[in-house]
Each structure stands twice: as C-alpha cells, then as structure tokens.
Amino acid sequence: AIKGMSLRVAQQYLEDVCEKKRCVPFRKYTGCIGRTPQAKEFKMSQGRWPVKSAKILLGLLRNAESNAEFKNLDTENLTITHIQVSMAQQGRRRTFRAHGRVNAYMNCPCHVEMLLEEKEESVEKPAEDTKAKKFTKKQLAKRRLKVGGDQ
Image 1 (tube, helix red, strand yellow):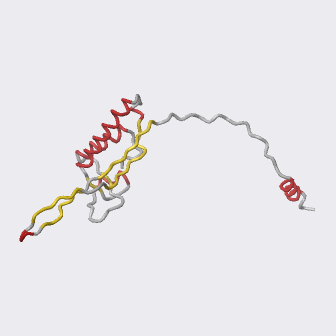
Image 2 (image 1 turned 180 degrees about the vertical axis):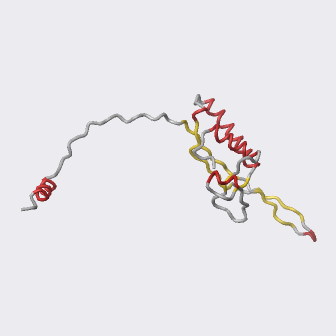
C-alpha cells in the first residue's frame, strides 16, 4: 500500500493506520476479511488495521531516513520504489500437551526489503534535428509504383 509514496506521506499513512483512521486494503488474500468504508480510498471494499506491522514499518522508514541523512541525500525528496516481504526461517519450540504429548510451537518471522530513491527532477528533452530518412532502391521503386499506379 505504500509503494510509490514519498517518505513523509508513507510515515503519515502508517501513523493513521496505527490510530485506525485509515485502513490497509487487502487485495490478494480477501477471504474472511471484513469490509470497511475506509477502503473506498483505494477503490476496494475490504481492509484491516495491522497495527503491529505498521509500527515495524514505521521503524524501518525511520531507519531508512537516518541512513539517507548519513549519505547526504535529501530526505524530503525520497520515494519508496520497492517493498517486498518474504518468509524467513521458522523458529522451532515445543509446547507440552496433556497425556505426555508434545506439539510444535513455531514462529513465522519475515524479511522486509525496502528501497528508497530520490525523485529525479524532470528535464525537458532537447529538440533534435530530424535526419532525412534513407530508403533502399526497392523501397523507392515501391513508392514510385504507388504514385504512378493510376495509369
């Protein structure tokens, strides 16, 4: 939901998600997801407020902002060009059940990739002088036939 947003806009959006003023639209996994009028902003009907995830992403954005300041980049001009979440290796623990049984007690961590780039200022393309098109003998012969084809 924050891909393509500027750094400040994304931070404000995630803070609003934490306060449940704006929702995160669920586009792919929509089974059993409740509907909310806040999702109309994204032309969707289903959305939720993942506060824990939003706080983690806010921390990542804060870290990226400090990294950009360290590299002397303009933090007001940063936009999120890529964000991806992928599965990490699961941690294994066990929980003890009745009658001496043991079940797995796994956690599901993830890796989050985020790329921020400075917005480049648009530069107008200089007017190029157009070169005369070169035609082969065959193309010139076809053109002559089209022109003189009425005879």
